[in-house]
Length: 64
Image 1 (cartoon, rainbow, N blue to C red):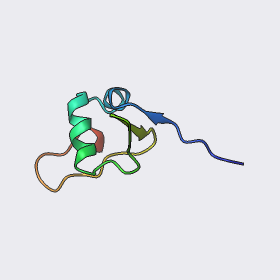
Image 2 (image 1 turned 90 degrees about the horizontal axis):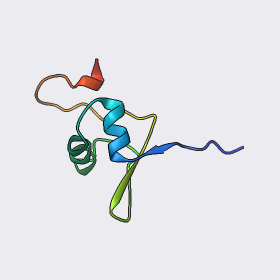
Image 3 (image 1 turned 30 degrees about the horizontal axis):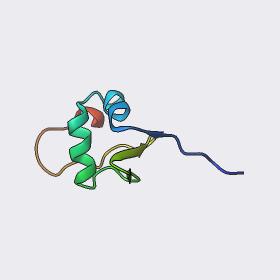
Image 4 (image 1 turned 90 degrees about the vertical axis):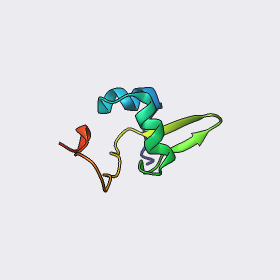
C-alpha cells in the first residue's frame, strides 16, 4: 500500500494558512517549508506540513 501525499500550489497553501501567496514563496525560498519541491517554475507543497517558525518577530498566524 502506498500513501499518496496531497500537494498544493503556493496559492492554495497560502489560502490554507491565511497569508498572501508571496509570503509562501518567501518561506519556500528560505527553506522553511519542509517537503516543498520545485517543478518547472512552480512550487508544490505537501498539504499536511506547517512552516518552520522563524527566530525573530511576532508569532505567525499559523502558529496559534
